[in-house]
Length: 415
Ligand code: UDP
Image 1 (cartoon, rainbow, N blue to C red):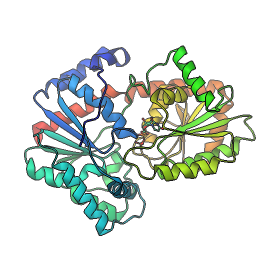
Image 2: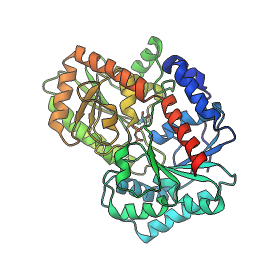
Image 3: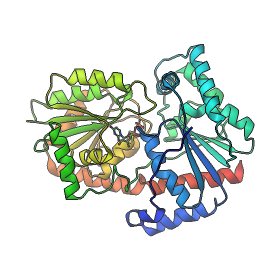
Image 4: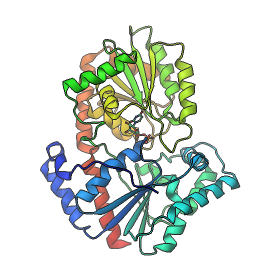
């Protein structure tokens, strides 16, 4: 396993955004955890929401005095094919694992677990990839408190996958979900809910000054995009649950009524996601006869920041969504979001207040909401301003840090 690089911001850097009371509150919670060592393990250093979260929160844990390590698993394609099946099965695909897949999973998770040679007070394993490490780690470190942090939308998991995963989950001391409803299907020893949050000072979300914005605009215009026309965008991994194909279908319904409108689909390839290239190819093929649809991949964070800011409308048409950081990222930039009424998206969007919530397969309503927003600038502004307030109140990093510190404090005192 390896330790990815992180930034070196401090908690007080966030004071001007969230207020000094919140900063003090976080520090008070952290003071109770001095002498506590925490390890986070996940399976990708970049691409996807978990890497995004850890990159921002780990240095803040350190800054407030909680000694924290972050390790990323070493694994190859065959392992990630198994764990993507676990991911898809937990999100509802009827999938079964072969004996060979189960063996691959056990071998790779055990091999990664042997690399943990220090004792920690709390070990947090994120998502299904490192879950299997529990068997080995629990034997080696019986005094450690183990937390499974499930970031997925587990409202209707496939039975066979649920059984496989449950065998591991029951050995944990505690499970953290992103939404209360996710706890109903999986039998867990004890659980709590922590909503993820965005980093307002990260490259993806920080303010861009005019000259930076111009650079990003020029960069994208060199790729053939224009910002003199209405722009709709969705930013997400190329993944079946993100339904980029459905976004294109909804967009095509409005093209005849909104002149020159453009759709920009931005997607990254996460290190641990073997489906990315295949879905990307499918989306590029679908868009190939349509010069108004742009499919861009692996953009730098500053460019994603600019696009989320500059787009007239952001769409997140997921069929399942653990949380969906991209929704808060856009709302923070005062861009209204049309999101599916799926998983964590409904925690962030209040319909007709800061965006629109639409049933996941309802293309007609998605296009109707696109039309409404694209043809009414004051509506966009009104919803956008509301979106900024929503995120400021609920979905910024210091709040998430406080929730984690509070939980760790309780776990240390009770387990
Ligand atoms: N992201 C990115 N570039 C891309 C696609 C996604 O930087 O081309 C980022 C996105 O801005 C967000 C994260 O990856 O920070 C995705 O997190 P989210 O919770 O929305 O979805 P996940 O990928 O975890 O399912």
